[in-house]
Image 1 (cartoon, helix red, strand yellow):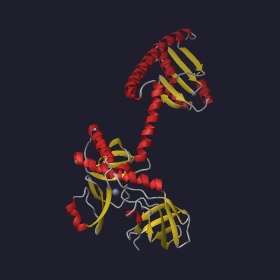
Image 2: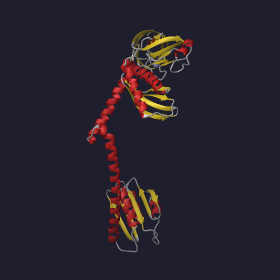
Image 3: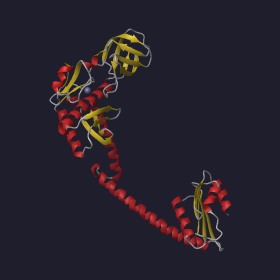
Image 4: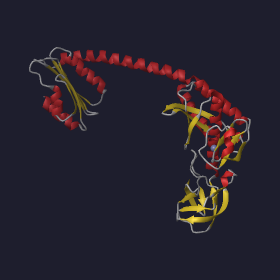
Length: 384
Ligand SMILES: [Zn+2]
């Protein structure tokens, strides 16, 4: 039996009584309901029914509305309560979508092909290859202007044969009597969802992220309470960044770009200084190493910058007949390097692997890490 949908005629009805026509324990069908089932991009309502919690609502091909409950109910007559805040939020987003889609047609003839209402934000997909920032701004301004005009949003029913002449924004696949939703002077479309009574109830409409998707351009938006929450969240983040930079929010992008530039040049300068320091230190270390056919520089560091130690080992290997064995305790790492083409020199890359270290390298320069220091110590013994 077709369920009578009370939200069709009154989207502000949150409290109702009904008769149970089918009871499958935690799945219940009523003769009438104010609960909205997931459809047309709008998520289902939640609330309570006969004392049980309604956790999901769906409809089927027989046009029945099925209430999924957290526990079975027994009574044949039940009282239902729809979560009003969640419903109103959905009404704001959903009606906002009608308005926004109509504005995209009015301004640029951009058709909406799909709509998604998520937990945080909503999106529409426009069947167009691209959109620019000015078009987004204009669509947002026009949408909000229609909100402020507080135009009536009304419901009417017409037989399918009559609607072709009315000029719907989007064709409908439904047959029989069609439910039409209009925003006065702007939009007419077939829809079974829940809508606010006038555009003012949508509240502010904010367009946010724009991205390219398979079927065109996806525009993210938020309406009403969500818009206020999103703006508050954004402002809080901006205010925190402003405090960190001691700057006004609007100066942040320029300032951050400048700071990033400065950080990059500082990084380049640090690298340059490290290189010249490593070259200088390498010369001194080799000169101080015990004399022999090969001067071996062996050093254990409790802490240090692994990048610097790698450079230092490389610089030692640039001295004539020298070998570097540098070990770092934290994180346990070994850096080895030697002057190229030393007669009878060992294959350092092979030795690092043989010692069971993670890493490797070439015959004359290698690096390896280990989970614990004792593995490095064993490798050092092997190298000696
Ligand atoms: Zn709708």
